[in-house]
Amino acid sequence: MCANIELYLGIMSIENSPKPIESATKPTDSEQAREPAESGSDPNFVLSLARGLTIIEAFEGHKEGLSVADLARQTGLSRAAVRRVMITLHSLGYAELNGRVYRLKPRVLKLGFSYLSSASLPGIAQPILEQITEQVHESSSLSVMDGDQIVYVARSTAKRVMSVGLSVGSRLPCYCTSMGRVLLSALAKQEIESYFDRAELKALTPKTITDKAMLIEIISQVREQGFALADEELELGLRSLAVPLKTRNGEVVAAMNIGVHAARVPLAEMLDRFLPILKESARVLGQVLG
Image (cartoon, rainbow, N blue to C red):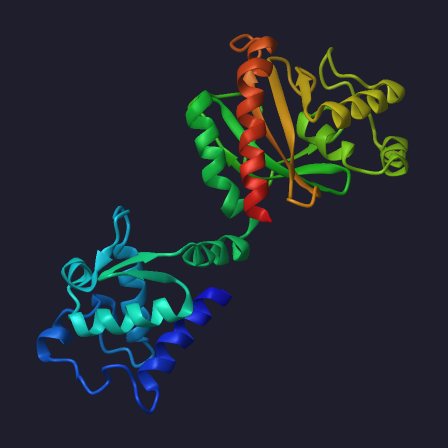
């Protein structure tokens, strides 16, 4: 957001200053005809900002940089308009000039991070979950802890049907799910013991572990190894692998998983093939979260 404001203020300050750069040159009829189509007649539309963003987008795929003439051809704007914007971007540190060629500088990335840092966790996670599903052809999800349950906040579903219907907003117990165990492992020891003191540990399948001491030991192992595996404990035939989603300062904010049919995907494949993909995806998402 700060980067967007700086870009806006930089452009406006140059165009509205007492001695603007090339401000004596008024737009010609042909220049006005080539302005961004979104401008219309809305008095609230900031034309200078629209020009700047259009020009920034024009650099895509041009590693060698672009001249003012190149940018004018790419955008349909006049050279005078392009030159004013590029002088502004250069002065603000968003672009560099080598001879007659401009290149964008890393500072432009702040514009993208402004969006990412202002977007919600589910919105940021969704494309990453979809990428996981595309890679492994299995469903993937993101959940957070709410009380004594996990709640699904984002999900990408493979084109396979499971009897357990899961979607965004679904709630499941922590003790018998891979994501629940990952989120429990991030709690302090006293909080974990308190959870198991009050939790109703039901055997949802013949494989569900309900022994408190055993579950506490499993949670300890999850914390050490950095992942959790729940094998047909929530539902027969459903196998799930989960990892923590951590911010760059190490705070666990969510859990990410891949769920499969047990008959189709053996445990060894989940650990050998799926776990590295899941860990890398969580790492990337964590870096984005900051």
